[in-house]
Length: 120
Image (spheres, rainbow, N blue to C red):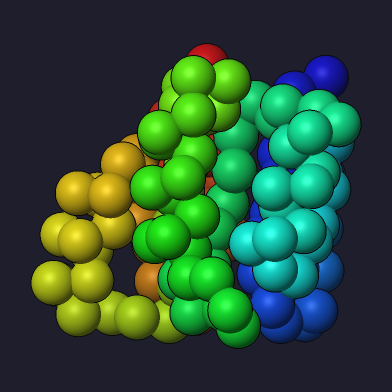
């Protein structure tokens, strides 16, 4: 079973994304900070990550850059899922190494299709 790590500081968003992804047969782990994500990655490397951009202490952009710089995590597909809806935000996310970018609020089918496109 494919695994997804969701990193979002909103518990509501975590639960929504988790429920949608579980419906398509994925095993989902959720954490609320980039630091917690880095700890989780020491235990298991997921098949895909969904990152919020705006989080306390370390942004999703910063986390993405760290993941891309580390050989053990640089190949994980990363989907940014954020309320930041400016074109520059999308450009910057992809420039940091993200594979896809969707904005909140999103339709469940949009998340599902994006995940299916990015999963190895």
